[in-house]
Length: 274
Image (cartoon, rainbow, N blue to C red; front, side, top):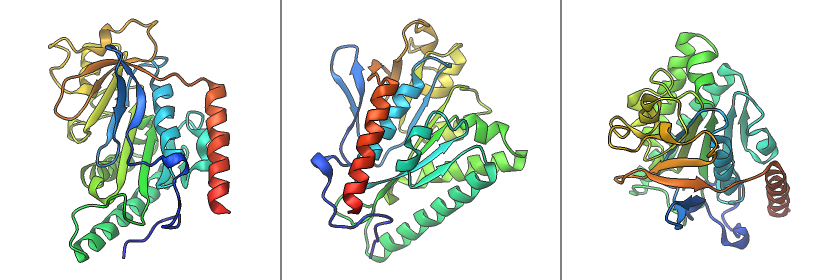
């Protein structure tokens, strides 16, 4: 049968929070909440340094860290953006391309194992009723792994493995969230970008950089993250599956807020372990 990778099947979600619940990202410009379900979807976000990408990414990580049915796998080439969450992560990868490739291969093997089990029990996807964690894979600064560290072969292997996880992981309970401050075609190939159901573009330096995140042609249609003013930190364009980019303001988390959430997640984790 399907087995939980970390926690017991009878774990009671604290305050009812589940990775299957919509995650709060912020507010749309019309005042409605920007809540998106992460399960069975993936999220790509990008923007120039200081645009608000890191705050939005911490909202995603915080949601996953507070969900007892999520296993958190963090990749942080700089070690400072996601480092605060290191103790709450089941897997943490720093600036080590060999370690990154090894972990992605392990995750690919786990994904394949889950699909074999789903086939055996004649099921198409994992659901919240299954005693198995959803694996939330968060990669911050994609460029460090895909274009900077290691050899060209290492970088190509990283992109190939990540593409496979994005393409096939959703029904097996594998969510991929990737972020970069260098949105360019060599960092995010079209074949990888187009697999992401959700895309969030914060201020970019050029029209083409905005299109690298959202998709080709959106800037020409007026959905251009390069037009976001530099002082409007946290403002971005969110593209959901099958829709149009919508202007939104991400929920703000100060460093003090993040520290508080990390402490709270630690308390919840220790309570579950007890």
